[in-house]
Amino acid sequence: MAIKQITLMQRVSSGNKKFEVSGDIIVPDIKPDIVSITTTNANTYIYKEEISTGKIRVDGNIDAYIIYISDSGETRSIQTTLDFVETINDEKAEENKRLLTGVKLEFLEAKVLNERKINITASLNIDYQIMEKENLSINMDFEEIGNVQRLTEKTKLACLIGENKVRTSVKEDLKLDGDEDAGEILKVDLKIENSDVKTSYNKVLAKAEAKVQIIYLTEDGKIKKIESSIPIMSFIEITNIEEKHNCEVNYRVRNMLVKINNKEMHSINFQTEFEVYCVATQNEEILLTKDMYSMNKELDLESGKMTIFKENSIEEKSIKISEKIMLENPDKIYDVQTNPKITNSTQNGEMINYEGEVEVAVYYTAVHSNNLNIKQVKIPFIKSTTNTITTSDLTVVNSRFSVTGEDVNVEFEIVVKNNSLTTSEITYISNVTVKEDAKESDYNMFVYFVKGGDTIWKIAKKFKVDMQSIIELNHLENPDKINVGDRLYIIK
Image 1 (cartoon, helix red, strand yellow):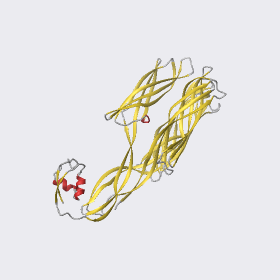
Image 2: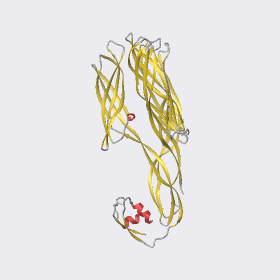
Image 3: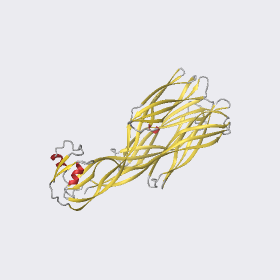
């Protein structure tokens, strides 16, 4: 009996939880009074996660930037950090299982309570996955029994080679133009791009780039922007890893620090700590025995089960959007930020019609003014598909903008990448015990009328004959298509 040992990394459970975090902020003494709030932005991350019996706990931060107009009419900002601790109940959570989490900021709102006090409210969405290793022993044949008929099925499995995670950090002083000094940070954006992996000597070299964009206020009140692409590199140990294996790498921000260096350095210090998680798999086609019978023995079959979780990654045609946004006396555009959302869905037969909108925020200064202005618009879109999609499946790519007079011409594409999770339970024969020799029938020919739910396999198993003998005797051109009431001749 040939036994094949395989290991699968299974997704035991997944889900998400929405919640709000709020708090009051006192304006520091060194800052001027607030007249009105222009806009808010933030970076959110989880710095610690724990899994225990029935519970998941996440600890994280919201690094928020509040841009406001002071009593002197100038653009100013306040930077603050809100921390959060959230518990998620999941009956499948256990200490020995792998936990993967992510957090997304849904919206951030600030209200002026008085000229020295602000209330800030953030809506967050935490998504999580619980993973575990499952070791399986699969019988590939049952030759020792002899004279058996097997119903087999080829199944593609992503067999686990190994998985591991490491922490890595990047640090860089972003040099400012000339000898100018930064006074306040207005906005910080971080994106992970150009992810790549290489394998060698039981290690995975994971490489990517941290694309950083910072809008800041100089000490003399000018709005400026600085950008940089910082390389991220980490070595992840995975035993027996080879170049032919598949490596899926996930980057998660665990901490972030952005601060203005002293005047002599003329720079902004950017530091981020990442957790890099890698899963290495090998695609294998396994021939599973789904059912079997002997033509001269009584068999006792034992079934095994495996639950297969597959991510159906479906690339849809992108949604191209071109829009003109009117500004008041625009002078310089600093950033165009896009945030796509699904707002409604309706079922129409097999098709699902999704209504959505892209929140577009244009950061700019006007002619003869150095205050940072924000123009926000919502651009609607419609997407029809047979696949279930959510807001998290939408990504904006190929963003371009240009200024014509008082109009900003914004062009971009919304890519729908659906990673919907499908679960299938596969049953296979794991063990066979020979009970006794089958009793020989006194008859050697039967006439059988097909019943509902019958297949040639089921009929052959019922009479303990070879499937092919039924097919040939009855001249069946397509054995998969038999109808209720059809008459079949069977010879033993």
